[in-house]
Image (cartoon, rainbow, N blue to C red; front, side, top):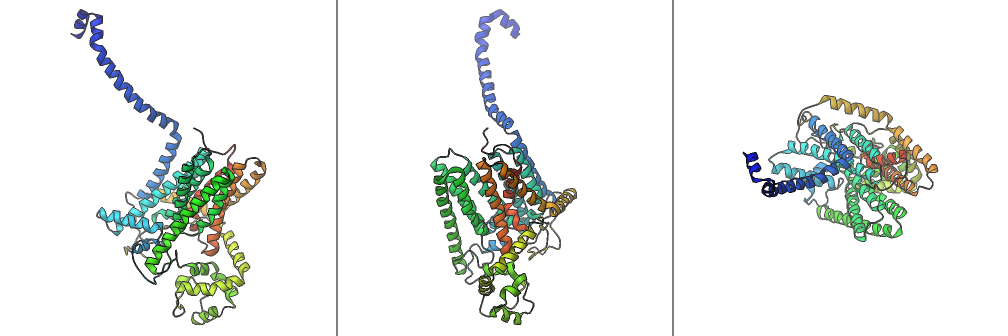
Length: 486
């Protein structure tokens, strides 16, 4: 019928009749195509990035969905959520109220709002920890991409996920789960600030403040990262000059100082003491308890303490029973140790460095499920996997962890030797040399200091694994290193 009508009307009439409809259709189709093209182009252009991100997220979600969850609180950070607004004049502040406490308090509020209980909190914590690990790996990959190393970044970020998952740390309430993404974010922001030459003054100020915030959060969780601030200023100065380094140093230092003062003021409100924590004496005792006899032989306080507690030498501080009357444990330990440290600094340092060397010969271990201090649920066993148990994945992670514990020390040796040798071949590549030296400092300094003044536990290396991964990538990278140009 339409053809008969069209034949009788003639071609000009048909054209006049159907042209508006054709134009409308073409416009709509073109509009849809214009909307689709940027998405299609972006996916094509960033297909590799998308694949890496999907693999990272999948690996972390599989861990959460298929593995058991520990009902044990691995350290005091979980309990400290209850003390965020509490007032305890004279109370103990060994584990400060830091980022992990805020995380767990937020999860508790969310779970209660959803009608769940404490059991749900542990599942929520496991999900949050796995997502924090995924975020750390994504930041690590983004940093590699910023330096023009996307393929090495893919290997490093996926390796980070598998290595950390092999410890099962994300299935328990460990503070390392929050420290790792804070360190990864700090390094990413610092690289962005130091490798982009065309930043405006406003952008420099914003990145400096953001870097200071991430570093400040790390410091109020564990103090050791504060040692990296001078190295960060040096790094920016070497790559971007004195003016940007001064601007960064002043802003970042001011932000970190403000956060520390705020945290100390909050502790003054809680405990009546303007401090970040009262754990100096306990940390020092952990660092020298195995050599307490030669370190403290001239100390009258130490000899009197041994009369009350003969097995004091080498005893962990949490097992000490006979605290001097009228003194807190930390104060008593600090007043006893500091004079001995002043008398025998070389002995303390020598012992600490030998312990550091021993730690570099160890892998991270598998410790996420180890029953520790408390079990608020009074659960006789681990909590079942939230979706479906997958023993094959657990076995894979166990094998990876065993392999890492056996051979991880070779990674340190290979990285250091490779980078040191290449230093002589890349004498004119100032960017590469500066990056390598800064990242070496950013990993080895905080881990070494931590192991000198703390127990030699390999878990203290976890927050700095993203820095180690960057150092490893630079040690094998070929060609110029710098911002990626898409």
